[in-house]
Amino acid sequence: MIDFTHIAELSRLHCLGICAFLVPANLLTTLTTLGVVATRKPLSIRLLSAAMAMIFAVTMILHVWTWFAVGVVQAPTFILLSLASLCLGLNLFALCVPHSVVLAYRWFRRAWSRYSAASALKSGGY
Image (cartoon, rainbow, N blue to C red):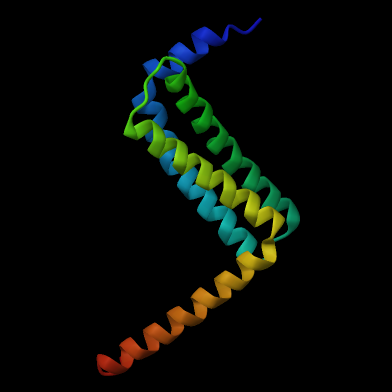
């Protein structure tokens, strides 16, 4: 049977390495999910991307809870918990309301094209 106390101890012992992997993994996979949903890729690709991102987010939440279990209540634990919760929420939002993600992507694209056109006019039009 699985002994969760050993797993939690291992998580706390290798915290730096775990966080060094999970923070960029959470950010990159969530950004990938938003990009995949915004560009209207097939449902199977969207689900795979979101599932990978949610696995990383849930893993980080569980890692932070191992610290809460031993009484470590500091700013980094809340920051990491907030980051993981935000990533998890964004992935769920992208799956549940993909039309909003597509609309936001279109809006940002239009805003960027207006900004780059105005910037090109200011700099001489190259």
